[in-house]
Image 1: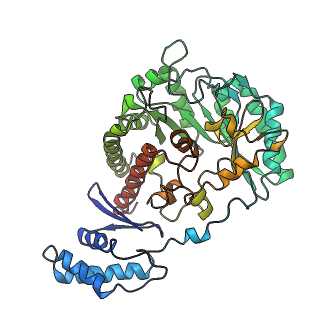
Image 2 (image 1 turned 180 degrees about the vertical axis):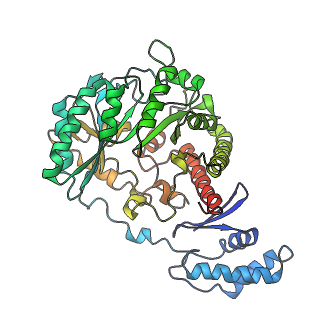
Image 3 (image 1 turned 120 degrees about the vertical axis):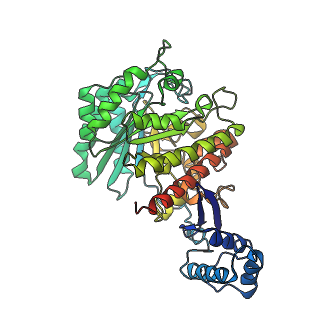
Amino acid sequence: MIHQYKNNGYYIILDVNSGSVHSADALLYDAVEILSGIVPDMETPAPLTKEQKQAVRTALAGRYEAAETLEVLEEIQALIDAEELFTADVYKNYVMDFKKRQTVVKALCLHIAHDCNLACKYCFAEEGEYHGRRALMSFEVGKKALDFLIANSGNRVNLEVDFFGGEPLMNWDVVKQLVEYGRSREKECNKKFRFTITTNGVLLNDEIMDFCNREMSNVVLSLDGRKEVNDRMRPFRNGSGSYDLIVPKFQKFAESRGTKDYFVRGTFTRNNLDFSKDVLHFADLGFKKLSIEPVVADPKEPYSIREEDLPQIMEEYDRLAKEFIKRKKEGRGFQFFHFMIDLNQGPCVAKRLSGCGSGTEYLAVTPWGDFYPCHQFVGMEDFLLGNVDEGITNTKVRDEFKLCNVYAREKCRDCFARFYCSGGCAANAYNFSGDITGAYEIGCAMQKKRIECAIMIRAALAEDGE
């Protein structure tokens, strides 16, 4: 399967099944485009036929010199022989029966607080309530969750635990107790916890920052961008804005992280479709690790993203990609989550096929100890998997998530992006199609655009040896 596109003056050819990316000239691009309609994916490399070569020569006659066309056909054959063009999809032959494999839990999202001190207008968690009641997780429930993770992680050494909410700093003492407990179990159980926390920053202080810098492998700092954008969507419950209080704390926190990870993470809505300005605002504030995600909301909401917004959004990603390259070359670059792409095949095959592992390898835990496939399913009783006392009892739903891979998703099977996005978010698919193996098509369109931009950026920076 071949995917081709032009972006920022670059001619990009992606051989989807091998993951090979080629930054081409116009002649190579055009020749491959002709061949992609007549050359099938090859189980093993084979010579182009006389008829295939003649089709290229005939189509390109008058546009390019005949000798140049012959040279590019030789170049294409060399790429075929190297299994970098027209390769077969070997992954579908190796798809495991996910339903039969042993379940190994690798990560938990601990809902340490179903409560929040902000009233974000787009919050899927209903200001922390998650379709239920306000509550804080007790140390006892959290302890049982960590014990469950240790007991169900098999031989895996590295385990991940994210403190989430609501706002987790509203239950800070329990966060500290659970980190201490997790560390106390590491040596005896041959495990290593990687703790992370997601916070709106309202309650940040020096003691919390120091603790996080010692114990948290990553911190996610929630901010939506420019002051007017942030304060419109992320106010306090009294309606006042949160930007002025939070930004200085985040700047101090990010600076103090040293070599440890952090991300300033925002959400853009229909109110700020010019979101590239918000990303650049983050960078101008001194933040180096950035992410901004499109809001996923009921189409009836005035701030929800609609299909007619996509052309502007695509232009914004292009604009952001160009500025990303410019700043990188000027020595003032930054990381943008959606432009971080591994062209050396990235994660293992199972990860590329099955995605985030929600419902199987990754679980969310409510304050009272219930298990759900991920934080976005919390409160949806059809997806209740079990609890910290009894373990996973709803194996039917768990097994449905085991089978949630790119080949189970009809709209993923022939999509060029499938090995990069791994099928996307099961919760978004369910909310918009009624099926965890369905698709959130607006989200798919944006994801494909981000991947194209990310590949183009790699091509542009490769020219300068970066």
